[in-house]
Length: 148
Figure: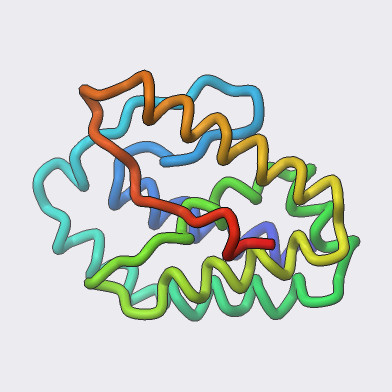
């Protein structure tokens, strides 16, 4: 659990560096407005993600969560699910980011109906935010069908 928690915190920090605020907030919490990437320096955030091996970190989370319902429960309870879900989109600067994110979320939801419900709720909140908040711009598309 400790490794998973630390890994997810690193992933969340890299996401925050790139986007300013999480694209997906905790279940029930108001979604923050999305800022411009790293105050006009997206190259710095991409460089940090590559140096910290973001895609590899997501793969490790996916491996830990494979056939591990206790790990999925820990991830959900500790608030780490939004950090993984926030990386389930295609990014031309970080090849395989989407695949690693989907792999991690899919493994987390595989044997955990509670985690599946939490993911569905987070995605519904995200769609609601996208529909009601045109000034912050649309968030990257996450295909729900690829997660379950």
